[in-house]
Image (cartoon, rainbow over all chains, first blue to last red; front, side, top):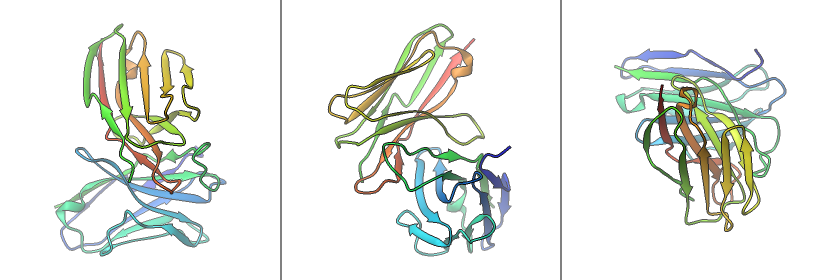
Amino acid sequence: NAGVMQNPRHLVRRRGQEARLRCSPMKGHSHVYWYRQLPEEGLKFMVYLQKENIIDESGMPKERFSAEFPKEGPSILRIQQVVRGDSAAYFCASSPSHPDPRNEKLFFGSGTQLSVL
Amino acid sequence: TQLLEQSPQFLSIQEGENLTVYCNSSSVFSSLQWYRQEPGEGPVLLVTVVTGGEVKKLKRLTFQFGDARKDSSLHITAAQPGDTGLYLCAGPSGGSYIPTFGRGTSLIVHP
């Protein structure tokens, strides 16, 4: 299966712990997006990365959240000192090229459900 | 930020019925996309509409982009239980190319 792979599917953390969410884009895709989904709020954009570069992080909280997409390996969304409000489904999507609103195709992974106790 | 308002929020119908869901904005979009998301999975792209007035068909699903490119609709003919899911519209936000999503319409089709 050459789709977008996210792991883990479910992650349980206690308040104050760190959460690391991984995303391997589709083969040949060099652009990664992270979204957070809450039932009442829908999908909210967090960050857009290319290999080794953060292109747009306007949707990501300034504190405790960080993202990377190294030259080798998956993209990582890291949440430090988690709080209960961080509980949500986190989705990663990838695309093959520079985003073009007329032709953009985002391929989503199955998400990571983060639960903070 | 250009907001996308979707209606209705919830829809519960019987198999065989027709339905239409809407995606509206006060802003003009260069394109709009429709996705379907099933429980526990990520959204899957159904279609992209680009030209004002454009109509695209995908089997029993008909997508229309408004003439002014501010709204879009999705019509499903003879709905089936397999159509159950969350239907999301998305479009590039402001000067960015990054898709912004509406909150979605949750559709349940009962056998």
